[in-house]
Length: 340
Image (cartoon, rainbow, N blue to C red; front, side, top):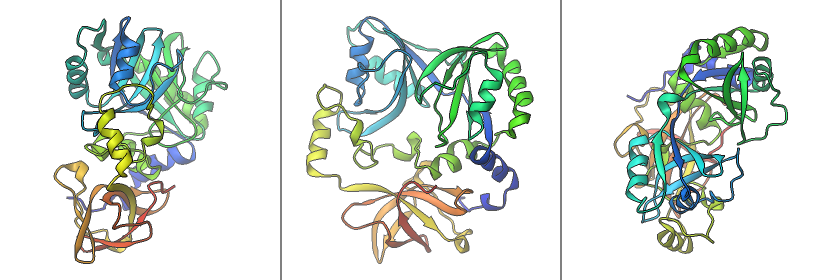
């Protein structure tokens, strides 16, 4: 396994295209950790490379979490819910909780997994704001990206974040207590009819085809890379201390030796067996002539661009956009990481 069968899967195509052309919604709960306490802000500012202390209440920020050697060990979205209360959204709760607890020391901080108390629905696509306004008590017309606000659906308290993992300019997330699941889904289904909404049930569409087209990552795509190799260097706050800073400064000053690029493969190679690193193992080899210059980190099909697409981590001085390389006998063209 990994042969491309997505191209001819009508169900996957319909769900993907609903998000791109109208609106798609799906139940998908990110793991949520609640971090509270009088030292919470300073603590999170030290744990994460991007600034946390500058966040306004009701705003969010994406940031990598680094180890002492400057390598990414998780990437998260952090919401500032109150002055000393944060939500950390991750997919790897055990790894993150262990790291946070190990580095807490004597700081006055409490860390709690609130995932069992909080379901999340993603509502994504050009018609998503219209659908959200149809089910919400208060308009979200003025809500900005990465803001989270209290609202209600049919009298049910919810939190609405303008965000998402599909790359769409309009997308929202609904956070709600699990006991209201049936009512939330009923509202989305009933009101969604007017906006050509479709429920997305295919996991590959949620985390593979949609985000990959727009250059989005999950942690398995970038684990054990550095921020500079995957384009995360601009958000780092060098004026503050954070775990991995010393090592990362050295990496920055020496220039990264690897870089994550996109690639495309023609449909005539659909049957070629290509296993990306994010499915386990080292990933398929990227060959330039007789020399291995990198590994495949992700591989999928993009219904919007009608191409086989993926990411490859390659040696920076041996590969460039436009180069034609070989991956397990298939010709691949190196590209930018954003395809659509």
